[in-house]
Structure formats: C-alpha cells, structure tokens
Image 1: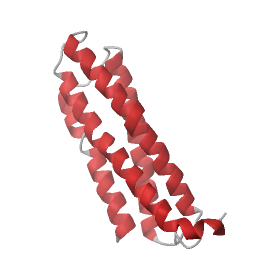
Image 2: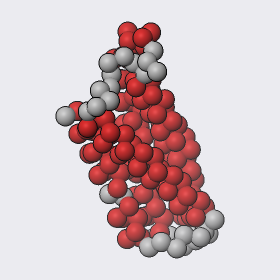
Image 3: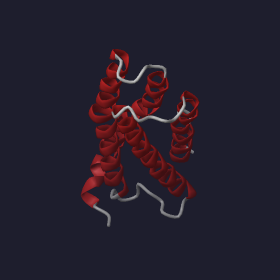
Length: 147
C-alpha cells in the first residue's frame, strides 16, 4: 500500500526518522555499557540500586520510545511513493539489520529485568562483547541506506 499524500512530507518524515534512530542508537550504545558497570557492583547495594534507576530511565524514557518512533516514521517512509525500491538489496539488508536491532533491544530489556531482580548471572565480559552488537548493526543499517 502506497499513500500518495505522504509525498510532500518525504523529507520531513526522513528527518524525523533519522532523529529518532539517532536517539534509539544512543540508548543502544549506552545501556550495555551500564550493564558492564552494574556487574561491578554488589547486588542490593546503593550503587546497584542507582544503576537500576539509570537503566530503567534510559530504556523506558528514551530508548524504547525512540525505537517505536523510528519504526513509526520508517513505516511512513515505506508508504511514501518512490521511497523504497523493493528490488534493491539495500532495502532488505537494512530491514534485516533493523529487525536484529529490535531483537537486541528486547534482549537488553530482558537483561535489565535480571539486574532489577538481582538475578544477573552473566559476567562483565558478556556485556562488553554485547556492547559491540549495536555498533555492527548500526554500520550495516547506515551503509545500506546511504550506499
């Protein structure tokens, strides 16, 4: 389904999509780093409780709303005539990377709940490695869209 009425707003939709994506990525880069630092605290300590608050606020007030808005404006762009060449490889590589990023977002949310309930069993090194996932997906998404 294509909505011709969206055509005059293409650049505005694209700008909102990029701004929301940028905010989403900021959270995706920072949240695993918070988990690395959270691993270094004693469960139940004041420092651990502070990390729980920081993680909740980052996820619930910035990262998740930004992801939802990124998807919203991305879908509007897809519905804009001429915005997507459905036969081009870039579209599919970007789409798959965005799906993977969304799945990673869900994993971050689950891991936050583990920390919240003092049930984290993953070592600091796990989160250091996980911290690289959004960077790799970010590179694939940007290069797919731009080149």
